[in-house]
Image (cartoon, rainbow, N blue to C red; front, side, top):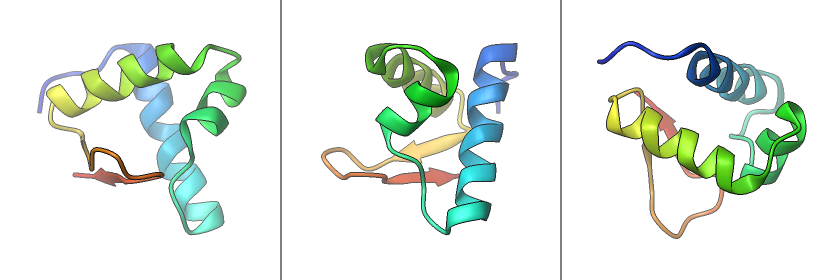
Length: 68
């Protein structure tokens, strides 16, 4: 796995904490609201996390993030 930027690490940590707290992965909107950013920014961050080997996403599925 490739190293993460500080923003990517914060996003990954939020995803992990959200799953631990609620039992399901956060939506793009929930991540965006937590960081006060637009949904496209979250989408790009998730793409980068996936490209670096930290997560896997299922295309077309809601809340389908798997932490590797």
